[in-house]
Amino acid sequence: MGSEVIVELQRNSTNWANVVGEIVKIERKIFPKHESLARSFDEELRKKNSGLLYTELNGEVAGYVMYSWPSSLCASITKLAGFNTHYLFLPLSSLFSGCILLFLLFNKPITCLMKDLISYMVVNGKYKTVKENYRRQGHGEALLKAAIEKCKKRKVQRISLHVDPLRNAAMTLYKKLGFQVDSLVEGYYSSDRNAYRMYLDSESD
Image 1 (tube, rainbow, N blue to C red):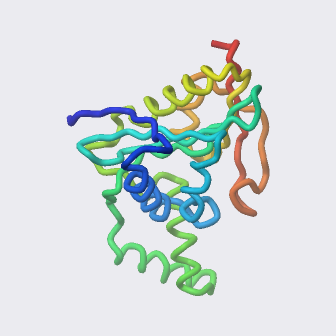
Image 2: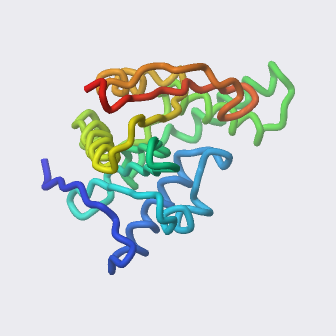
């Protein structure tokens, strides 16, 4: 296991462009366009009320968390990705076979079906996006804890986030760290994908 360190990205950092560039590549590969901040990541990070922490492992960005504080009373975890830029994709033959089967069943264009199939696998944890030797090592949990501490230092009363109810691993992590389900937000990600709004009150620790 290599040397791991959590780093706060500073606006005047000399490696700003390199780190943001790596994160943008990750965003484009693992998030659908309507969920990705790839096109606006640099702009979002330069806002005064936002911050980003990333895990550097063996010289690479192994994960990142983005957070913001819209007001002095509340903060929001806007992105958490414990991923690395090396990916393990399913064989193309498996994707095409699945798409052909769906085409015969639903008579939709192959390109649309491939997008739907990949989205399904991502949501249900069947699409591997983490380098195997970085998986299940607690990078995501460490990042989230660090972001929570950053938010608490700003004396916010509540930290919130949104998560797909089907992402069981993420739900388990958030609940482990004290987040509670506030409400179901229908159509948050897309017309057929909802989200739980979850929150953590500072005084609940």
